[in-house]
Length: 147
Image 1: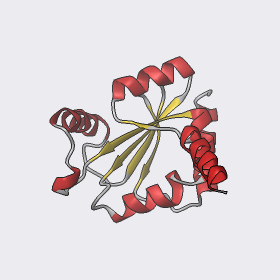
Image 2: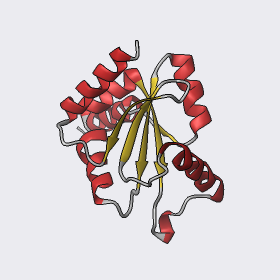
Image 3: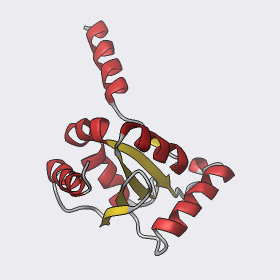
Image 4: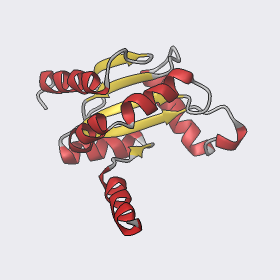
């Protein structure tokens, strides 16, 4: 039984797409794979709606299955707790992303971008929908972008 659980957890780990933290790397991956980028601005340790978005949408099978095949995931996190502080280099990258894509400082703020960084769709705050509904919105936006 322990072996089965270990095997299943390993499969889940390999099937779960990683959230990139570097915009240039995300753009390159998106170009190589002909995928779109989902950029999420979060306050992972202080923003209630951000935590809810992660738990109720981003960590679900419906979202992860779609994202694994169709998206490059990019997270720009702005934690407040000292123990969660980012490196100065990462903070600088996140600040640059915020200057370009989130100058008003909304949290959470999620954007669907093409491989060149052009904004295709945005969600301000928690999207009041189910994980399946969110995936449908992503699919509709992807189709509209020709992906």
